[in-house]
Amino acid sequence: MTARKRAPSETTAAAAAATQPQSQETTTAASATTTDPPIAPPKSRTILKLSLLLVVPYAYLILFHYRVDGDLKRSILINAALSLAGFFVTRTLIPVASRYVLRRGLFGYDINKKGTPQGSVKVPESLGIAVGVVFLVLAIIFQYFNFTSDSNWLVEYNAALASICFMTLLGFVDDVLDVPWRVKLILPSFAALPLLMAYAGHTTIIIPKPLIPYVGLEVLDLGWIYKLYMGLLAVFCTNSINIHAGLNGLEVGQTVVIASAILIHNAMQIGASTDSEYKQAHAFSIYLVQPLLATSLALLSYNWYPSSVFVGDTYTYFAGMTMAVVGILGHFSETLLIFFIPQVLNFLLSLPQLSGYVKCPRHRLPRFDPQTGLLTGTNDGTVVNLFLRQFGRMSEKSLCIVLLIFQAIGCCFCFVLRWFLAGWYK
Image (cartoon, rainbow, N blue to C red; front, side, top):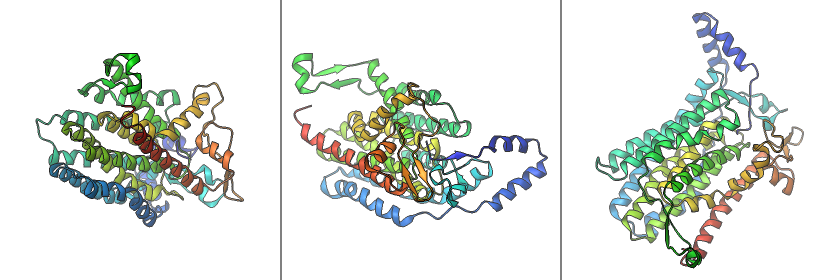
C-alpha cells in the first residue's frame, strides 16, 4: 500500500458533481485543470545512475561475456530497443495521466509528510496504469519481430499477457473502489487463470540429489499440484509487492532491483546452457522483464523521494504478476522466491495482523515527526518498521535506500547460494 491518504470528501464531491448540470461539470473540470499545479519534473540524474548500476552487468553478460546465438541475441536487442522507447513514452505519458486522475479526484496526501507543506499537496494516484498500458503495447508489438503463427511459445506468451492485463485491471479497480484485504488476497487467483489454462509445459520437479535415496525418484510428476503451486506463486508475488510498501520509491524500487537480478540470472543460464528449449524459456523471461524494467525506471523517476506521483495498487499488482509469470514460464520459480527474501520476511511478519490475530490498522506505517523529518518504527509487523526499530530513526529517503540495498543483498545471496549448491543439490 502506498503511503497516502485519500481526501475524505472525495466520494461526496463525486456524488455532488453527478447532480450538477453539464455546463457546471465542464467548468469544474476546467477549474481543476487550471488550479492543480503540474507535477515535479522527473529525477533523471538519479535514474541514470541507478540504470547504469543495474543494467551494465546484464548488458556485459549478454553482449560480451557469453557467446549467445545470433538469432537469439537479435531478438533480445530488438526487445531492448522497444523497451528503451517504452521508457521515454512512459516518462512522457505520466504527467499527462496525472492531470486526468487529478481531474477525476484520484489523489492522496503523503502521510509520511503530514505536518509539513509537502503533506498538504495533492499527489495523483494510480499512475501504475500508465506503466501497465505501455508495457502491454510493447509486448504486443514485439510479437511481430519474434513469433510466428506456429510458434510453440505464442500461446503461452499471449496467455501471460492476458494474466498481466487482467491483474492490471483488477489493480486499478482496487484503487478506485478500495477493495477489502480479504478480497485482495484472492484477486491474483482469477488473474492467473489464463496462464494456468494455457500452460502446456512440464509439471515435474527434479528431486534434490541428497533426497533421491529416500524418495527413490530423480524426477517427480506433480500433475495438478504443480498448477496449484503456480497459482499460489502468483498470489504471493502480487500481494508481497503490495504489502512491502509505504515509502516513496519503495514499491517501484524493489521491482527494479528484482527485475535486474532476473535479467542477470537469465543471461547466465542462457550462456551456460546448450539446450535450445531451456535457452528459449529464459529468453522468454527476458522479453517480458526488459520492458518491465524500462517502464518501471520511468515511473521511479517521478516516484522517487520526494514523490510527485503515487503508483497505486495498479502498479504493485501489475509488477508482481509480471514477475510471477516470468518465473513460472522461465522455470526458475525457486530462484524467484529467493530473490523475494525481503518480501517473504515481510509476509511472515505481517501474518498475525493480516490473519486478524493481532489488530491491523488501516495504514501500517511508521510515525513521522514533522519537527525532525525522521520516521520512528511502530510495533506493526512490517520490514519497514522492523528496520526502524533495529537501526533507529531515519529519514524516509535514507530508509528506502537501506531497504533497497537489503533487497539487492538478498538477490546477491541467491546467486551465491546457487553457485554453492551447483552440482550437489541438483
